[in-house]
Amino acid sequence: MAEKEKIQNEEVNKEEVTQEAPKAEKPEEKKQKKCKKDEAAKKEDACKKQIEELESRLAKEKDDYIRLMAEFETFRRRTSEEKLAMISSASAETIKGLLPVLDDCERALEILEKSSDEAAKEGTTLIYNKLMDYLKTRGLARIEAKGETFDTDFHEAVTQFPAPSEEMKGKVIDVVQTGYTLNGKVLRYAKVVVGA
Image (cartoon, rainbow, N blue to C red; front, side, top):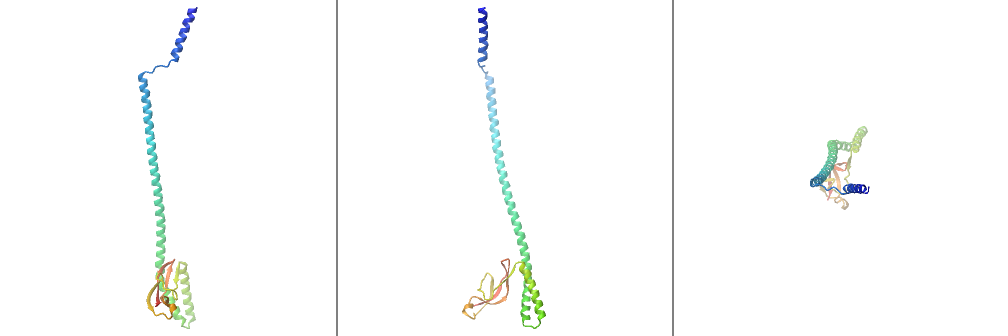
């Protein structure tokens, strides 16, 4: 019996040794594992490159989008400014065409001051005031010149006249034609006589 036990123990020990001992890898298996690792590394590198490429394309597209939006905002602002300028220049031309009518009304009022016809004075004054009030709502303003210091930004000197006093030198003595501004810009310069 002792021999049987001895044989059984040897068999058990052999089985344990074969189970515990790592299997020796064959060279083909080593090559396959190495190839798989190399392929995985190549795929990982390719994915990283692709991610970098996509990120750079996304950044470029985002930059292009931002530039396009900025250009559109500039275009929108410029066109709205051009529309406003066109409207104001159109109204400026219309108002400029009405200035001779205002001049005629002023002349008529000056002549009617000497007249005794009260109805004509009142009617002309009413027409002049209505027209002037309407034009004021559109931005028209009269350039006050008489007695003011000569200013080339608003006045156009027609002639110089000897000043009646030292105080009037360099000042406007008389207004030949009334000047007007439209929304702060000179529409027509005041034609004046300057004291010398």
